[in-house]
Length: 281
Image (cartoon, rainbow, N blue to C red; front, side, top):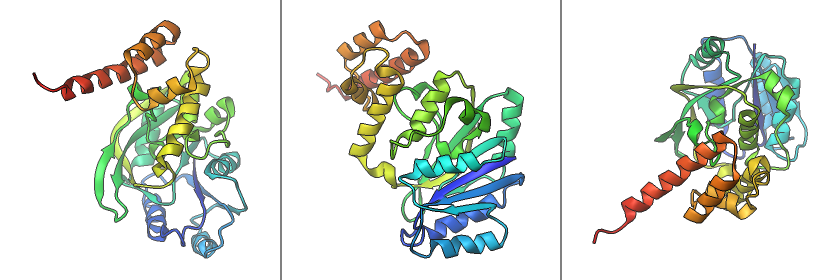
């Protein structure tokens, strides 16, 4: 069984009701239906509980709790603790499934490869719901930016039991920290080159200064401090602004080949970009 966890708060007043309804509809058209849906509401005050009650009466919500929480990651952690499934999937209220075989395909690949988690691609939509781009999974980028689209991930529940929950001190980047912890704990992932989810632009991740600060801190905590990189070094890594001197420092300090290969990829991408931008003489 899969435990689908949806954190939410004030869906109605935030203008997300139409997307939430689409998420619920596309969840219930999945070809694989052995799942429970756990919704963790942050004490909404705008009619969201009436909306959720509508779906609870239809039997589409198995567990619903509504109480104050400090951020979305606390809500996710509450959902994980309540999960009865062998696998966990976290689905946002303003995303929806773009492929009816997401669960079926992911489970098949997890069984075939004996991986600990799977991930795929997602469509990015603008606020009007129009297609903008595709975000693809890319494990090569894991140690300088979020490599997986978390809405496309199916993760064994046992992984949470082993490496811990989402770090609630973060308000934006805790899912990235969780991914890095999985990789550093040698958890095996499997990438499926299919679009599984459609996701709107915006949200918490649109606060760019906040994102930069939190991701830099995550990189520092997960491997930077261990390898004598500064917080400012980690900020440059996330911004993909690795200078030749910083790259030399990375090569001399970092001994984990996975991290070094990823940061080398980042440096080479930046170097290629500089070459392209260099004016002709």
